[in-house]
Length: 188
Image: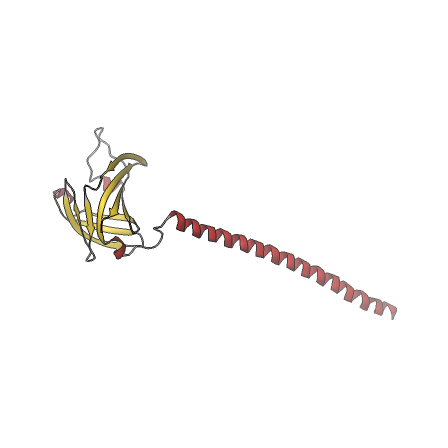
């Protein structure tokens, strides 16, 4: 009978020690999981803040954001990853986007107009319907759009096939890719 009592005494103590150890391990595990979760939440929060701070253009564009008259201030051409031309426009040309899906461009060397529509969350498809440069009529291109209350940026990317529309260099070659970034400021 003593053995039985002893076993009864040992078993509860053993279970108690084991259970205490289990609770301690569970608490430690929970603390580690909580710490890791807080780290993840902090990283996600930081990424959201950084995205908002570095890009005011992160949200999908809407037609109202681009509607209005814009003064062209700068164009940057990048061919095969290298900047090949920077042209300051100083407002010599203007672009007008209308709510009805049409646009017009006026500069000292060209007047053109056409249609546009939003494509995806950050792109605009434009088609040239009239132009002083007859070879441009019918061109359709997709431009990445960045816009805020004061500035509009249109980035047109030409791949190797798109580059065929341009004249070859003096050495007979063409770039394999080109980006043209046009920056405008809001007039009204």
